[in-house]
Amino acid sequence: MDGRSSLPSPDRDRPLAEVIEDLRGSLRAAEAHEPTDEWFAYEVAFRRLRAWAEGLGVYYPDLQPEYIGGREHDIVLDEASSTWLKFTKPSAAAYQIDFDADAGRFAMRPGLPLEYLERLLLLNDTFGELTTFVGVGGGRGRPRIITRQVDVEGEPATVQEIVHLMVDVLGFSPLPQHLSVGYQSALAFIRDDVAVFDLRPANVVTTPDGIIVPIDAIPACVDAAMRARFAELLGRP
Image (cartoon, rainbow, N blue to C red; front, side, top):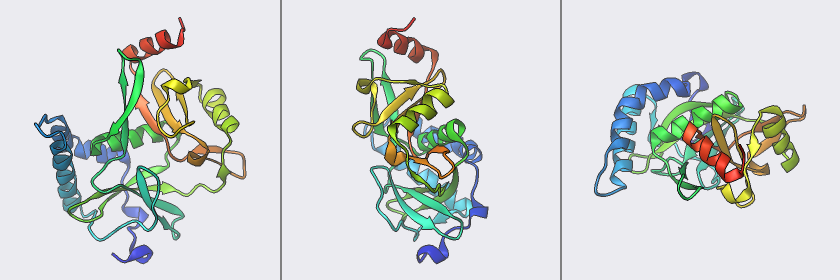
């Protein structure tokens, strides 16, 4: 597939919730496996993901990103649809956030494909429907998950704008820096149902109309046990 002229059409994209439902059986089985080699679970999950994409007709073995991104994604600009195609790094599915209740801290670890898609769905649910599922590309040996994100025009948000969005608009509480993960000085916030990490000016856009839009972040679900532990750590009743 030769660059922008052959990019997948947006009308073939699928909602994340629909894709997750389709994949949950086969990928969850792979991700729940407990092999002696911890990386074997990743190999199995990506192999099943690629086979599923081939059967659906959304496997693009020759499609590669044009631009190197950050630690999690590389990208292609689809000018015709004003969207970005985001590719996970080869044979990777970005990062997940784990919470160690005993230690009272978060840690990042490599994600599995289904975890990654569930993370994106949680991001959509929190900030609006910006991302859809495109397919799998990057070659048979080193597959990449491809999603599509709306191109949000504007300027990097200030720290004050990020805090305003998260606290005043969305009802989150800021987490202290020692409980944050991601890039240095990135902000983190928590609400009853979700915590969001790695918010920083590079990941949030303020549009010309003053709308503040997170375009990249790492969310994590929060359950009752985590809420109780957070309250203890933060000294709240």
